[in-house]
Length: 264
Image (tube, rainbow, N blue to C red; front, side):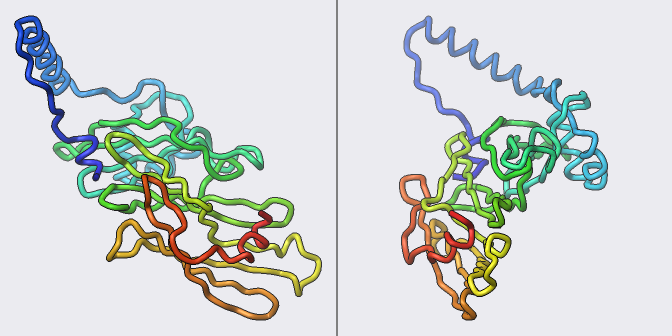
């Protein structure tokens, strides 16, 4: 389902028959009305890393969402991207400045769902530390997408280890009030090459991939691999499909050169 359905939809309640339950029901209604009248304030303990302030100041949408979510305290969070969906926005942030982590350290990521209200924003859901991705404390590009009717996001990350360079995609969907890791099996590796690890140029392998969700089947992730190896180039298509809440290999096979080029 979309964020609107999972985060903003009306909450159902059972019918309460006896008097004690009726009193409890009235108390809950009063509490709900108070919550509406006094919306949640920005988190007092979170604010921008110094290096983030210039980028945020240059993006009015991002600045408005950051102000609505975090206020102006002095801890270090780094806003990465504001993702806009039909019914809400999602502010994706990481703990610490990108690129300042150790070589094998991922970026700790959190997501804040913001409802657009009267020209401003109200935080309606928080998913703290939902994943730790990438290397050197940084991730790559981030895209808002839709998967089988759910608002979702794709996050690219990667790095270089012992001369092998590669990047991969991770997918997360907003579903039933949760942020769900779709855990592609096998992992979706994108660009990869072993040029830094191979002294023999004839053994160099380069892989570049493009990807999309099938417009006629929003559960199908299509990846086209372009492989350059041994003086020849070819293209292979591989399809993952959403099954039981996870992306699993559905058609084709990941070319063996992908594993060779990424050192895996």
